[in-house]
Image (cartoon, rainbow, N blue to C red):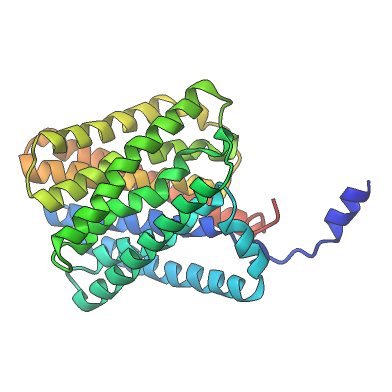
Length: 325
């Protein structure tokens, strides 16, 4: 009874409980904007929709970043608890990833802005990568703490070569690519062990299964960007991305009737990643199969982003987001 009273007495300040996971919204929206932009370049799709969505993503990024910086200023302990949390720590990399995705979006329209965003994103991401890995090594984590969100700080390293080609020497980009590919394999082994031999994920973490798609899909884009070739290894990466996409959709029953959490945004960016990979496959092979698949994945991504955005807005109106868990 005393515990209940003490919980009720805590003031409900929305900013205090503004989660770092909100940056996943930017990843999802900006990822979709890249899909639509690529569709307009390679296949038949109006450019204006991609441009509007990219600008909207930029505005939301500034809004989320501003709120989180304000939280850092007012509630340092809350931010400290997130950056030392075994699961939430991984979502800090969403800040640098969002910056890198926006750098890619502005690449051919505002080159200087794109370069600034790349430098900021790449620098911040390597800092967060080292910080997160140091945290994993220095703390006694339980196997239950592992989930596909652990891929977020790793996958970001694979985005750096996509954003940074011709901005910086390739040797630096290979450095990032090597980190991403190597630790993707290591972490995948850990997470597969967690999924098969231990308790199921809590419902709020079920959407993070979609993150399994991202490393091979982004790895494919990054590898082709660096090598300029569609070789044997590139085919392996794309095929793995396609396999995980089919796998998570065969597990659709796992996502039915899940209560809304901000983690639903984990559905979005991985779908954008496989859509971009498939469009690139069509660009390189000119096979109609990949053109059709590109449209299918793009439509699915649009539907998922729209549904998750709708639910996010609805729960914001009900004040069910940014509350103490």
